[in-house]
Image (cartoon, rainbow, N blue to C red; front, side, top):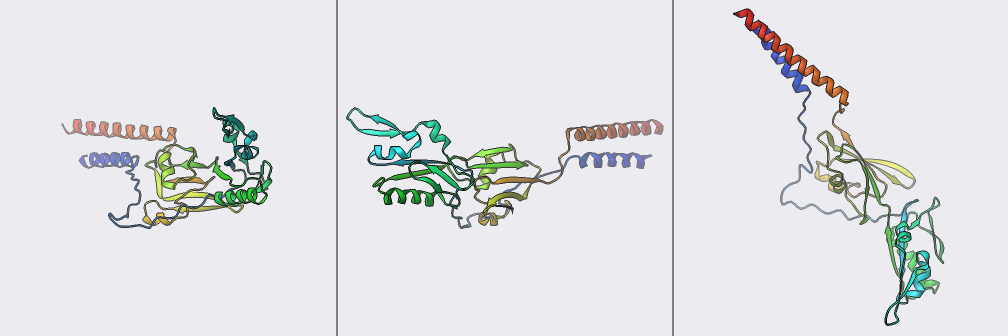
Length: 266
């Protein structure tokens, strides 16, 4: 009878322990203190179809730049007679849409090919045209990508869309901004799905390894999809409740058999 009791207790402990798994999430585990690791150059953002761009043209002569800005610009005359221009916030915020052919429809200059160009290359293109067509002598061209968005999926604290205001973000920063990895995250296989030259490509990164610093997905790009795989299947609420009942029932059964054995031995 004592062997039976011991066996039941062992079975109970095994059943309960199978429901609770010790999990650990680590970052850059093999990074050595005081060692130097070469920094990866931040890649230039390339414009893609359906991106939205904020493009503002400035000049020493504001009225020359006004036709190139959204709504033609707003003239402001100061107390001393100086003229400045500004644009309405709503239109500037909406920006220029890169159409399905990769072009933007820009005031005066017409259709401008944008798809595939870096922001700096597009700046230079517009700057050169303004100069070469004798439209503005010394223009200042400012371009910002308005819709740099990253989709976060899988085992992160907060799934959803990340809006990146400053135009650059690393994978580690994106994970941090999404609430970090859950305890069920497979940190050795962080998947990034990226659009490149009309195709989608999947990368995997191990954020526990310092070689991650050299990964092409260390810095993310617009429209990247980040998926963090789970270590194991996550039980549904019903399954979780079922396992709780099983554990509770097994514990009660063990207790009952133990008490019965004690009474029989008296």
